[in-house]
Amino acid sequence: MPAVTIRNLSEATHRALKVRAAQHGRSTEAEMREILETAVRPDARLRLGTALAERSRRLGLTNEDIDALSPARDRMPAEPMSFE
Image 1: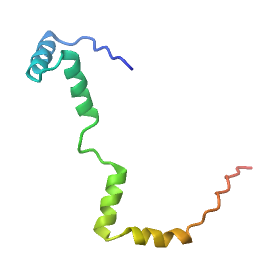
Image 2 (image 1 turned 180 degrees about the horizontal axis):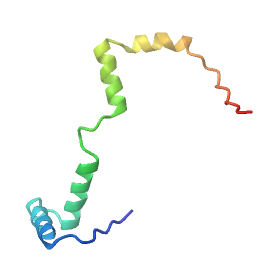
Image 3 (image 1 turned 90 degrees about the vertical axis):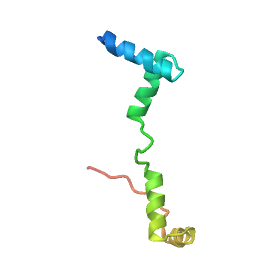
Image 4 (image 1 turned 30 degrees about the vertical axis):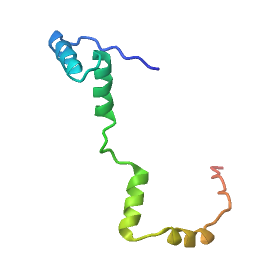
């Protein structure tokens, strides 16, 4: 698992992290992991599959609609492009 070193962290920031960790019942390291995780992977991030499913529901599409499109789909493998 990757490890990260944070250099030049002020004493005040380190103290604040320790206090925040204690308030949440975690170690300072666990608190920093939680802060980073929340910052880079927020709950409200757009998830493509969820967005597409929601859009389909708003349009009123059903599984039967998708099944109706399936026979018309070209199942032949694509030809690779040639640049010659």
